[in-house]
Image (cartoon, rainbow, N blue to C red):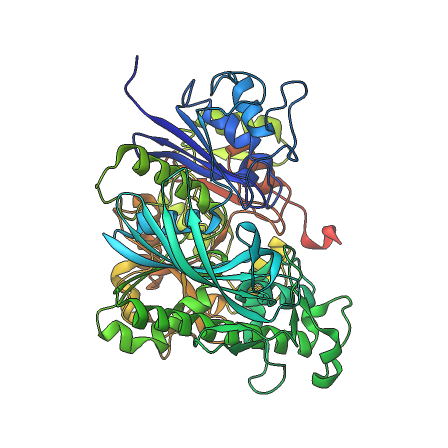
Length: 612
């Protein structure tokens, strides 16, 4: 019998996904949407099935969400076990349930500590021995709270501050809970006893009838005409807004110095996104929602207001957490951690903290998908009590399909119309295609975990093309204002961008200012505000991608390429060779290069005018 310990952790809800751990090391981590091909897909059943390809049986199935499993969840007929537990049982990953209705010893339900799952993912990957973790999230775990001050209240986590240390110590020291009930703002002494981990906590909770920082952002995102979960579009739109008093105050300071949302402008609607109070619209010249919202200046102003105000609120939260705890290791996670504009803002306005030796780590898989990683690692450290510092890992954590040219030819046969496959194509030829302003898709190795394409599932273009942003947005069927990223050789980054103390940016988590004279050289990846969301790369991190860019530099003098995710608007990143070739033939992308195989696929597609 093997002594290996296998842990499969899944996260339910939007951005569903999973993480498979073997003896504390990630075997794979991915989101459900990559397999199901449905953007933001929940219900990680396909992810559970993928685990079966690596191991016949797991020791633990750890389930993360914002609520615990219950009889109200979808259940398997007759046996009554939960959908995910039942599916894992049916395919043999876990044992049969002992008897109907009994607890399953292999199933660990962590729906009640959502923010701690964010914290665990970020803390373990930060490389710190101990840290203060700040979670800025939409709606975390649900709680029915009873207190003498307010009676019975249904509420959700919005922001949390958690002290973390090895092996499995995660203690709340501040928490903001929001509710729809009109209760004002109260301080509630809170006792928390976790019977799974043995945590025993006593702290003061801030309970309010206000939405959280992220819910306010989601409210404005919906006002701008997007889905609440598409906050990245609002972040892209914000530089087009006007600076000044063109929108209401979305936040205000509470007496402890932390920022809460202004209930006059943002009305809570837990657990859904909050609502931008329409009674204020006419005061600021805002109009009712309609079509083409991003073309209207008041939408741009609203996006500008929520971005600048929210990042100020989080920066102040970081400052006050440091001043309160004195811990120089600060970790940031939760949905707002993916706001690369805000992440760079902290580097600017908190320079005095960094001068004092504060270390800020922002988790690159800050979305709910990261809670599966957090759940897996937390359970591993809890069971083993290991003191080994985990540390920051590569994000190339998807499945390694070990593709061959036969796989490419099989896809060619399936999508044979206009598809040509050419082998023994050296980097020079592929780089020349980019230099000649063709979009070239790169497909190699393991797919990226998290939302950023980092060279393994990327579309590459020439950053010097003045019309490059408009061209690629049209090909990808995205809105005109959506910016693009750049990948640069790490050794050149400080000559091109103001990193504000950062040595590198391997996970594309910062939208940084370009240096003087740079915008004219790479106009297609410089956004309206003069920033570029960059990824630095070394040969050790990604040898093929590094050498591809190095060859582009040799030919052009530019050590950076235009990089965007290999997908079309509204679709997940491609996962398999089949996904890649199908996307190629259904778009205006003409070239797909496999660096490991040195194979080039060419699709002769119809003209753009034929798509009208």
